[in-house]
Amino acid sequence: MNNKFDALKDDDSGDHDQNEENSTQKDGEKEKTDRDKSQSGGKRKAVVPGPAEHPLQYNYTFWYSRRTPGRPTSSQSYEQNIKQIGTFASVEQFWKFYSHMVRPGDLTGHSDFHLFKEGIKPMWEDDANKNGGKWIIRLRKGLASRCWENLILAMLGEQFMVGEEICGAVVSVRFQEDIISIWNKTASDQATTARIRDTLRRVLNLPPNTIMEYKTHTDSINTAPQGTMSSKPCLLAKLVKVAGSHASLLLFGSVHQQI
Image (tube, rainbow, N blue to C red; front, side, top):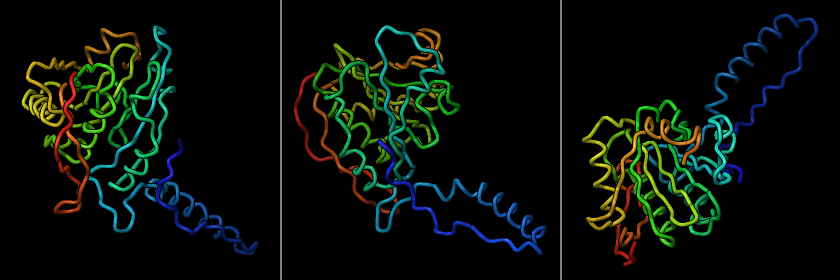
């Protein structure tokens, strides 16, 4: 799926005819124009909220990956296997993507959806991730779709209240179970990881005896094949506009299910 929500490029193509008698001066101006365009190209292509849309605090990117079970992959081949779906900057842009995406419960094989802040790749080796870790929750089949939705809504709505620590979230569909995880930047910050854990329990309404594992990315790299990545009621939620220009979560009600 291509990113359909890139900001529209401006209409100034910069194409100018050059007069032969002023070719030297014109060439110099053209080179400068090209340099300026190259430097500003990222800004022109930046994803921004549309008119009257509700901005998120950070831009986020959806990714998808799929691999053959039991086949170790190098870090390079894993990176090549990750497909970027698209980036969004507002509540409305998120729903345009999400409403057209297959739900995790309908995926087959070893498939993963990743939702990370723009500029952070869903890889342990990424600069934003390399000193961090992730909270992991294993789910019985049938719960991944709802829990994934509630997790990413909480993340987009800044419910974890840990500043810039959150990097992203992953849902991993496997044959006998599904796994959701949330990644943060600093594994050594115990106060932050504890707050993320407690918020995750609340957002997913997990029972006290739910097993939650925290694993550093360093441990993942050392113990897993190279380059691989590997609850009770879930709250219904939706994003709404709040004071300022950000989005938050309005949690209302629950649906009782068993992990």
